[in-house]
Every structure is written in structure tokens, then in C-alpha cells.
Length: 338
Image (cartoon, rainbow, N blue to C red; front, side, top):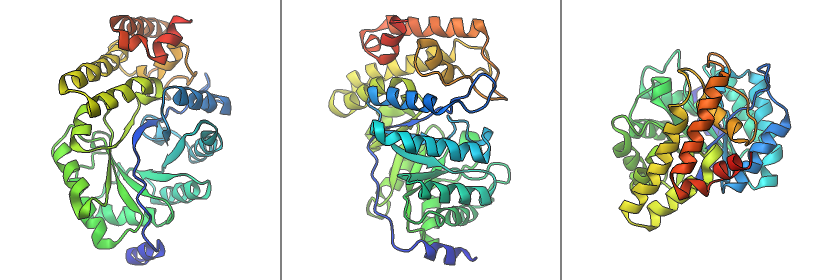
């Protein structure tokens, strides 16, 4: 079917979603043998998110080890979050990007069928689109599979190697016509054209499109640029801290905002510096503090050793001890009780 015909199937444009606040890029929980953990592991994560003030989940993205999962595992994860999310007042965005456009379309149809709030999609990463028009055409085919859902392009060039300026992509999408295209999850803010590109997308066509910041370590810059929604892996365990970062950036002086942002940056260093190369310290953080058990990272991640876990726990304890703001977080309160 021709691209223009596919776009036409989508019908009337979908109303902008306008996500505000934190969106946790959720971990996929694994059992010790590497299979998906039970549904109770997802519920434990949802409960933690609610307690830390997070109201959105981005399921099976990069943090969720998306392309390490089988087709059926990804469908199961989406269904679990949909069945549990409403109980904890959490809305679900399902990531549907794969290297196969056939599977991406099926994942996108499935997300619509189970009632997801929106879809996020990252492009093929092995056979990369050669031009921005090829990328837009591929996106149009996938977006047409869920015409009722807002559709977000997931820009993460450090992982995909797809580096086109997003404003160019938006203009190419407009030339085709994708009624449910809603905006961009922009993780590539640290590479040119970065924030300049993001700002231009936000003001393009009367502010029609949304840009979700994908860098929690740049929340201060994201607020200044005009981002209202933030997607991040740190929101899995420290949503309460990052809600404070966001509110401080929006309401207090730049000096105060920098201080609180640095506490978040110190948390990144606390788990990143503690473990051996290749170990998923980000995921294991929840395990060592006594939070929801999400297991280890799937291969090719390196399994965490007992020494890695010991150093990780010590690193988080040191972070907790370093400031009163850190001590107020659920991470530190839970760690202190174990």
C-alpha cells in the first residue's frame, strides 16, 4: 500500500496529548533465570512510582531493554502495565520500535487494541533509513497502524545512529501527512543541534508538536527550553527527587535549581561509578536498596557480582548521607529500613 494511502487511513488528526511531568522509562523485570518475572514485579514497580509522584510509564524502551525482548515478551509487558497502571493512576505509553517494520506495525496495533495512551517509536537501527524522507515514510507506515493514538518519534542517536535534525524530520512528516504524529521524545539533547533543534520543533507550525526531554540530567536546561514532559530511567527509583528538581527549576532561582539538579547528577554517578563495566547499575539500584526487585540486565549486560552489589549499595548509602534532600527520598528511606 502506498505511503499516502496509509496516511489517509489514519483519518482526522488526533488531539495533542500534552504530557506534563515525569514519565518513567520502566525497567523490564527478569527472574534469576533470565525470563520475564511475574506480574507482581510490575505491580511493585507501579506502587513505587505512585509513591514517588510519577504518573506516566514508557514501557519497553531503551531502559526496558526493548530489542533484547522477544515479540511476545513485549506484548506481555504492555498488557501487564495496562492491566495494573490504572490502579496506581499511571498512564501507559508503549514503545513499538524494532528493526522489522512488520513487527513495529503489529506492536503498534497491539498498543492501540489494549488502550495505551500513546505510542513511542524508534527507527530501525541496523538497516538505517538513508534519508530523512525515508525515515518519515517508515514512520508514516507504522503510525497508520494505530490511527487513534498520539504517535511520538523516539530520537536517541547515541543508540540508533540515526542523526537527522528533528525539525527536518517534522517537515518531512508534514509533507507526507501523518495525522496522529504528536511530537518527539528527544534524548539526543547532548549532540548538535540538540536544544536548538528541540526549541525549533516546539515553535514550529504554531507549537503543534510536543517535545519530551529524554535527559533527566538536563532537566534544568529542558525546563528553560520549554519542555513540559520528561522521560527518564532515574524516575524508576527517584521520581520524588526529580519532581523536586522540576519544581525548583520552574519556581526558584537558577542557583537553587542547579543545586537540586546536582543532587540528581550525583545519584547518576553513585550507581554509575560503583559497578564493573557492562553491569546494569541503574537497574540493580532498586534491588540493593530494598525496592521492587527487577532482576539484572539481560545479556549482553554483564551479571552483577556480589562485589558489584556491595559497592553499589555503599555508593547509594553515601549519596543518601551526603544531603538532607537525598535523605527525604523513598530510595534512602527504604534503604535505611533494611
